[in-house]
Amino acid sequence: MADKRKIALFAAGGLFALLILAAVALVLFVDVNAHKPGLEAAASDALGMEVRIGGRLGIGFFPGFHVTLEDVRIRNRGLDVASAKEAILGIELLPLLHKEVRIVKIGMKRPRISIEQGTDGKFNFETPEEEAGKKTAEEAKVTRFFLDVAKISLSDGALFYADKRTGEVLEAGDFNLDVSRLRLSEGKSPDFLKRLSLTAEFACKEFRKGSLAVSNLKLRIEGKDGLYGIRPVTADRLVYSGSGGKVTADRLALGVENLAVGGDGKADLLRRISFSGTAGIGEVRTEDLVVSDLKSAVAGKDGVLDLHPVTMRLFGGQGSGSLRADLSGSVPLYHGRYSLSGFRIEEFLKVLSPKKIAEGSMDFSATLSMRGKTANEMKQAADGEVSLRGENLTLDGVDLDRTFSRYESSQSFNLVDVGVFFIAGPFAPLITKGYNFASLFHGSGGSSRIRALVSDWEVERGIARAKDVAMATSENRIALMGSLDFANERFNDVTMAVVDGKGCATVRQRIRGSFRKPEVEKVSILQSVAGPALKLLKQAKKLLGGRCEVFYAGSVAPPK
Image (tube, rainbow, N blue to C red):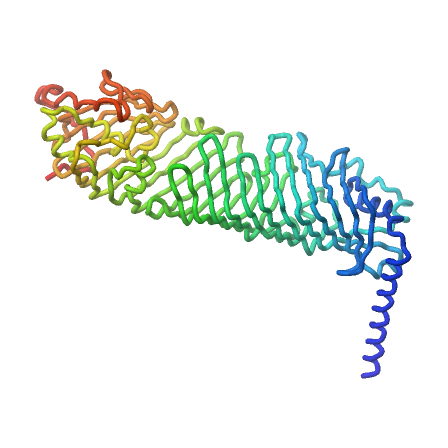
């Protein structure tokens, strides 16, 4: 038995030595450049595209036997698809003994890849069916180059993608890609992705797609038989710059499972993919707000995208909800639910003014459905409910009870300021564009305890109607009636009133017109800080002649 082992070891060692001698002989005596046309033809046949080597070829033995190619270019249908300053082809030694060149590894330095999808949905790297399979039997017999690539490595690369149907452009600069266990199965399926299996790692310092920029993007892909997993996907920062301002997201971590692409390529990609996964973002910032610890489970199929649940920290409170986006039809449909519990109103108001105006804890909830291709279309079609509620809040800068008690002599306090800014709560950032909150209550002095605040709204076709909107201080109640037209950005006969124990108005003030330049009581225009304060008008005695209709009959109880 020991002798047999020695013989086997000796034979193996001898075979290894022969292989080394063969490799050395190749290096010393073979002019590898003579095989350039064969390599070009084999690569062209395997890829279905034109492959040309502009520079010289060289061979080496470490690490592993390989051929180095300079200035490689790949073209298809007359257009450049890819190029590389240098390409390294790993070649198996044993097939060389049979005059076969079997390429098992490909490495590229400084590759430049350009992918285009035409108006017909075809990519520039796809070969027309009528041109496929034209190689003659004689050509197949004499060509002895084979591509059996299991590993691909690209370093310091650049990628450009353009979709001529949509005008979409994508760029990836300074990227590295390592692909292993690469296999393309046999079959007649025209779907390249369904026949591809691989494991890949991708890192890119800068990625751009339209108004979107991502830095230090990293991901790992595993795929087999048309199903792919992409996990983890991480990025240091994502920045979106659009007409609505800039959004910045830091510390992104995503994971995608069971990703598959179906269809014939004619439909949009979002309508053809299916997947499930998770998403997490450390912090999202806009000019006005900061969202932290954002997490969601995500699933997509047949053009329908579901995010459920979605959780986050916002304004010091804990938020949760869900979102469904149906992109399968000609007009996108959206449905969302969201609640934010225990958020701090002082954090929320920083969005509107650096000055501290109020403090306390509040709860927000919303259920909305929308449809449309643009923001304006979605606003016009919005339906649902929105609610903001809080108790034991403090309003700084003004003592409302004291102001109301002596308004007859002063008549200088603006009820609209409190009503629009506070009672219209969930919509305050949208409808207060004409205000300057830096001096909203400047000079009034004092503070107010708001015992209860309720702001419940029904939204139908982009118009929010006050359902139960009121707040109560220690001695007074203020209520709001009317509607807000968000599609046209207008107040629709919104009325604020101080109401008594029966819900009858004792003082009221109306506001109508555009959000930016609203008209108050028809005779005044609500101005910014520099303008004079609008006066309280129309005491209940003068308006109602001693009797009144109930203005408010909602859930906010009168002061005791």
